[in-house]
Image (cartoon, rainbow, N blue to C red):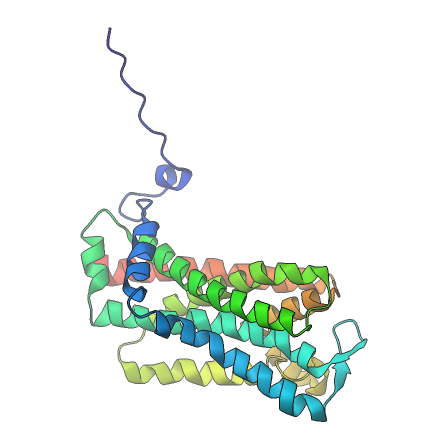
Length: 274
């Protein structure tokens, strides 16, 4: 008597989502990126140095002029320790956004996703794979930066161990929303629009100054910036100053990630499957 083997159980997403949308192969997209960057690893690791140079400049220069500022809990802390979590969040953001620039060339010039969608891979696989690779790249930057800040004695609480998963969440949120926005670009000159948003967000999201130094009207504008929520979450964890408001920061980043994943998946499907 022959016993037929029971078919392998399909994953939950494979059972719920239509095959044209998701086939459970985002790892193939990530694997391709790993193979590509294996030959150009210097480009990959170059993003580690920018926030490190910022931190070194503040440690040796500006930090000698402004020695202490009020921390998240109101207690004084060194200015360099105040800036370090913000630079970590910025590093995670930049790693995600810069990787999504590559998505534009794959989509508009390389026609890579057209080839991918001719296989069983679906739009959600493409979106999840590219976002997953961006998270890996941002995680590399974050681990390197955390090692430097830890060696400099700028992390004063065991809650700082949670900075890495938060950095990955920041990378995930920015990668997802950036990928969705990049699909609307039609030429490389339109990258200037993204830079026009990134630079003010970097400068004003409490990266270098507490929120209280801004006029009240500008404070509400700053609270709308995604980077602000990542910085506030990381800064509180770095010194162990936990507050209920951090749950709001966390919810904001999670919502941004969900919107980005849904938006990028839908846009890829609209551009390449219709």
